[in-house]
Length: 250
Image (cartoon, rainbow, N blue to C red; front, top):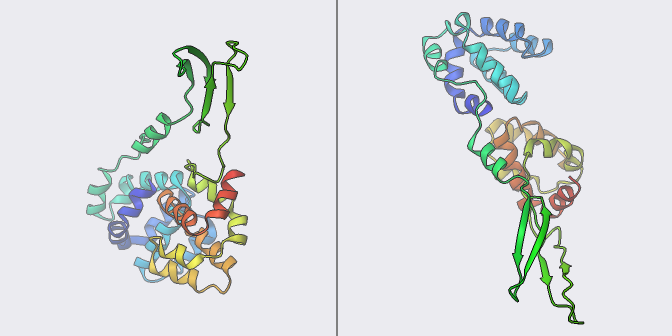
């Protein structure tokens, strides 16, 4: 839902600006914003800026609030403020749908591996159930030095930092490691360069005097999954030792 709002933000700004005060009454009635946020928006001018700020607040609150906001726009007494809005919102499906990424994540989840493994000498070994997304290499030797048919398994543990395991939930990873990221990230400027943010947001981050303040401000702009993924990718690129450390403890 956040992606729908983000991709159609210019359209929403144009349609909703015609009666921002009425929209704010509906948004407040649905408890999608706090009283302090409502008062701040009511004091803002011009109307276009009110809608921009409102949409940014909705995006920062996550998927569930974004869905409720789009459902609100489907109500006749709300979308009557703009015929264009009424026609567009009819095409938006706010029911939960499994995305292609959800399916891939499910398909790549823990699957038990069990069966017969053929060794180099043609004999067959029955394997136990193995689960997990990362499987360590296992070498089977079916011939013991004494000529016995004992099966020995030599387990080779890989270096945890030698390969990057995919992070399944980037927003949750950033949230859980918020304090450590604020304290330890130093290469802020190249990280910002790799992100797609509004010019105003970038300026606000760069204006901070310390790396800690910059990182704290930057994390505050992570209001959707796509930005979270881009930030995690940038952190791996410019802060790889730190990210390996955080992921090993995640």
